[in-house]
Length: 218
Ligand SMILES: C[S@@+](CC[C@H](N)C(=O)[O-])C[C@H]1O[C@@H](n2cnc3c(N)ncnc32)[C@H](O)[C@@H]1O
Image (cartoon, rainbow, N blue to C red):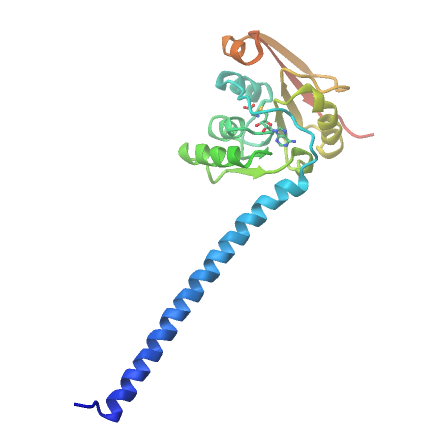
């Protein structure tokens, strides 16, 4: 039996509607997929674009007990915003907020993979919303907000780091450097102690922490 003209029209309209529904869904999916791909690419770009090529060395974590002593030496407290330049797995940033109750903290890290690790670590101890990890070159970082800066970087670049910090940090900001001094800066405190955890890292248990305070500008 042949379908009536009305039934044929209804079937054609339904086919049309189904086609546009599927087409619309496919377009929405493609749009979302492309946007995500473009965003991921854009996130990766600043790292490459802002890299100065000056490297502070590979990831070697400050043992937790020493990270603790660095933050205590910097007298980190609720009024502070802490920045770790070359933040690795995020331990200094996370401890500053979780244990020393800093009002906020940020890590700048050249290795995007480590930034993901740090974000995960912060979330797992429940401070994900109070810390910020940025993938990029520390020389391109905006450090003005910091009241305490922590460093564990190779001595080869510390001259350049000191020049940046001297220009950009506000007077009174504390800088704590693990094992290596900032060339040309006068420490307000130097703490030396033995830590067995350092033997595997630097071949000796001897550990030195340098505390600096950014002087008033003349
Ligand atoms: C010795 S690790 C210290 C990690 C962490 N601050 C700690 O104390 O546990 C140095 C870190 O600095 C990072 N780094 C090296 N050069 C850098 C640069 N120019 N900008 C940002 N991060 C850098 C490395 O990828 C590495 O994770």
